[in-house]
Image (cartoon, rainbow over all chains, first blue to last red; front, side):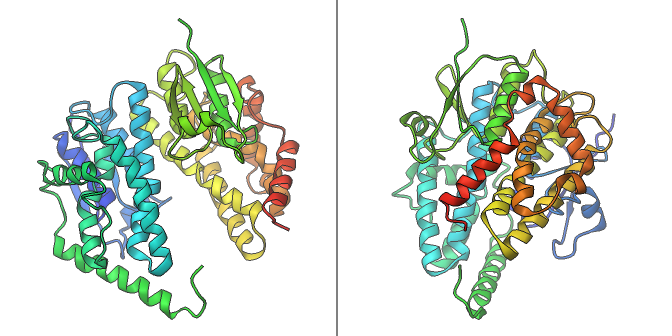
Length: 229
Length: 218
């Protein structure tokens, strides 16, 4: 029976990258459909009318959206190289940390990058507090998944690439090697792991993209006459 | 060997109610411990050091946090009775996608009773858009899960006892805009697991009045 697997992604989306990694780690053949997010295709809008975003996995014509939902779907459909643990308690822990990474770590690090002044200071403090929890979670483990890359590693994986790009652009340290030695070495191990290392988007293009986003954010905040909330 | 199940919760929390519904669906006995969030207990801080929030399920001494994660845990451990997630991976993905989506109602609903003027209007618009989309997803099915009450039903039904409060402070009618959703919520309330877990809408309304006073919203 022919399996048709398509992944709607963009060249830079860290969320779509999670799905690229998951598919390739499991050895699943798929077709990548690259979207220009400033000019979304009718197909994208048809497959994800609620959020209109990537990634979208289309399996035998049926779409699934939201990266966490897609990861669990992939893990349940293709059982080789499991991403989530078998034990229900360990699964709950993996889901908990994945949500924490998304809701808290990602949000605070993004704010630390995109904001200025006092807001940036506060975001850096929040980011450090969040990273402390991850540092603690890493004790005795090579990856969050244990010996092998797992669900949480894929969810947090953007950190291993984007943080150094952010740090280069803003000239500030976000993940200090001395303060977060375990997390720092996880970032190196993850970034260099087979499959992961083959799929990073081009660094120079990323720097241009994120510098432009920062410039736009600075321009819009300084042009508004009232002070930021 | 009996399971020891403790639920750290706040009576009015629609997120905590999701866990109560799930536990009731599975016919599980547990100890309910009401939490005072203005004066957090050592147990809460120990069991949820990251967020310091409810609900927290403690199963044989081990904590699980975040309401939808707890519901999935309950479903996976006690898989033999009243399964909440369907067995087909695609149906499971749909249920998870929409259950995630219902979480938006929490913050939008909060803004509805916390704010006034333009901010409130924006929250109201967003809130109704969410409900309408969910009503579309329900279609003509008796439950979101189809013939059987399931994961997405659990995720959303607990908000229904908050509708009266939202309507009062937001000045709108859920039934006028989403009659099918209200019919669905009444159908769910016919189930013992739901009616025994949800709170009286009038009491919720009183809770919101108290919160508004405390937070200085007029």
